Amino acid sequence: MNFGFARFTRSSVLFSPAPGESSMAKITSLLMTPATLAIGLAALGWLDPFHCTVAAIGLLLTAVVGFYSVRPQCVGEFPDGTLDRGHRSFLWRRTQARASIYYWHIVGLMRGVLLLGVVITITFVASLAPGLQALVLDRDRTQIETKLEALEQAADWPAAADLIALRLERRTSHEWRRVLLLRQYECLVAAGSLASKEDAQAFFQRAAELAERESLNKDLAATHLERLGLQQALDGQRQMANDLADENSERKAELERMGQDVAASQRVNALAQCQLVASRSEVQQVRLDLTKLQTEIAKARSDRARAAFEMLIDWGDSLEPGNPLRKAKYQAALALAESHGLDEAPPKARLSQLEQAMQKTQPAALPAGARAVLQNVDARTIPPLTIVDLAVQRPTGEAVPGLAAKDFRLTTDRSTRAPVVATSLATPSKPAQVVLLHDNSNSTSGAARTAANTGEADLLKQLQGVAQVKTIAFASKVSVVTEWSDDPAAASSALQQLALGGNTALRQALAQAIDELQQRDGPKAIVLFTDGRDTVGGPEMAELIARSRQSGIAVHTIALETAELDREFLAAITQATGGVLLAASQVGELPQRFRQAAEALRRPFYRLVFAEFPASHPWELVIGGSNAVRLSGRPSEPKQ
Figure 1 (tube, rainbow, N blue to C red):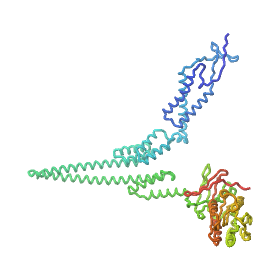
Figure 2 (cartoon, rainbow, N blue to C red):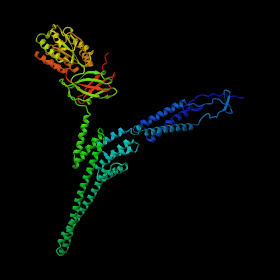
Figure 3 (cartoon, rainbow, N blue to C red):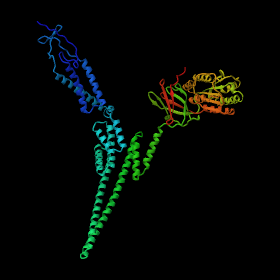
């Protein structure tokens, strides 16, 4: 017996033709599927990103499934069709060595039809889902509304109505369809109001039919249609009156000609006079009828205007305060009242109330040049709440009063939130941490030293019970005069007993004061007295400012104006950290400047309580609306 050799291989049904098939069959089968799908999408008008994406995904899935699908291929077989695999024999249906190219055309066409069915099914299912209906059906909403706003601003109402009608021929969500129908109704009425009498009839009729068909309020269109009917009747009466007047003129001319004929004048003239009197009576009656008709038209117009006015007021009342259409309806009612002599008080009152309601939700405007100083961030006192203390000051250093929770907004890279509570306080919950820097260089000797010691004693006395103070003196070197104490007045005598030094280590003194305050809790401030400039060297001004702002340290400076005073440096670091620069042109002004510094330390501040505060992400705190002040950074790490 002649035994053939049989084996089976795995091949893709979609991409690999049977043995002997040409590559043209493979290319034809591949191209027919997307071609059929594209023709189907074009016929349905679905050549948009959504349907094209669904079709592309379908093609990709078909390709993947086709790649992993298998079919047995008979490489060798017996003459009678019997194949052998191991010791088992079974019959295998013979196939032709080469399939017709039309077969592959049909296969590609069927795949395209199947994919088109998948796209239609996905679209149908998406349109049934409430959340997806608007996504699928209203994808061009923004584009359509932009075009409508442009047409309405240009007063091209017919084009706007036609655009809406064209869009309504396709499926939309129920919510947007209702909005489009209302806008189409308004556009038709507006187009009729601006059109000629012949065209206005058509626009108003379309508006009335639309209201009847879609169960809208058709009073406005009915009013315009009735007005047109009355206008046409009035035109007819006027035409009749003109005809009678013309006829009367002709008869009068005829009577004048007859009067020239003396022979037959009496009888003909009497008859003509009777006809003339009758004609005048008819004309007078027509005039009375016209006057009555005009009165009725004016009354009907007033009634319709009042009905439209009340409808606009009720329409605006039914909308949400944040809806821009509410203000538009009130403005339309006000315009209607002005043009028809109606009561303007209701729409004006509603517009005023709406404006006040919107202003209550807007952040308050800050004075020009206002600034904010972050004093403390506390996340440990009442977890999980975070307490933020900050001072908001005018350029002169006075506190900005009257701010509420709506005037503060905390923004992160993920969200924006307002504080739960915003309270104005005069005394912090924790004692203020103050470092007093005293310039003890040679230039501060004599009357300047005496006046400064007097002012410092007064300052320390006012901080008694509300602040913990550490005093540091600087000349050529920086030295601690007194350590942190709840009784700052005790440092007065120590400052008076200091021996004068040499140069001025101003930058080193500021750096040491910042180091001291970084380890403390509560509002932090530096009170600096000097009359010169740094002559020793130390950190750069930018570094000192950055470290002060990062730790929430305000630098208040009492400066005795001399030829050596570095006013530019002092003004920069004071303004950047939210402090005040108090310059004394004479020695006698120093005590008053120290008292002003004490007042600045005791000024009111705002306490904000946030339910959520970023633990590690960058944040920005925005204060106020106009002239807003911004603070940014990260919350400080809790201390052990």
